[in-house]
Image 1 (cartoon, rainbow, N blue to C red):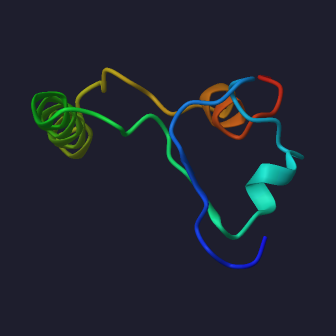
Image 2: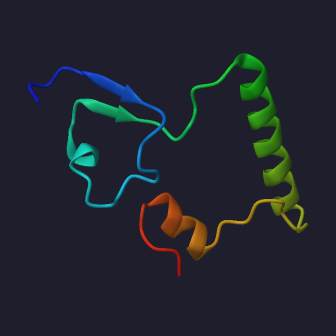
Length: 80
């Protein structure tokens, strides 16, 4: 808690991290959403992201929709 980065975390227990978890408020802890990967999986992820954006901007149905339920889950809150 002195200002140095002392932790970089990619996986949590419990997951998702509860919304009121103290770890979310610590300025020297870096939390990432499962982005620790290999170069090949990173390439596949960005390819998927570009494909999703292309579908969206061309008026097609996307494969992975963002809904209030998925947003609540990412924030550590209850799904509605």
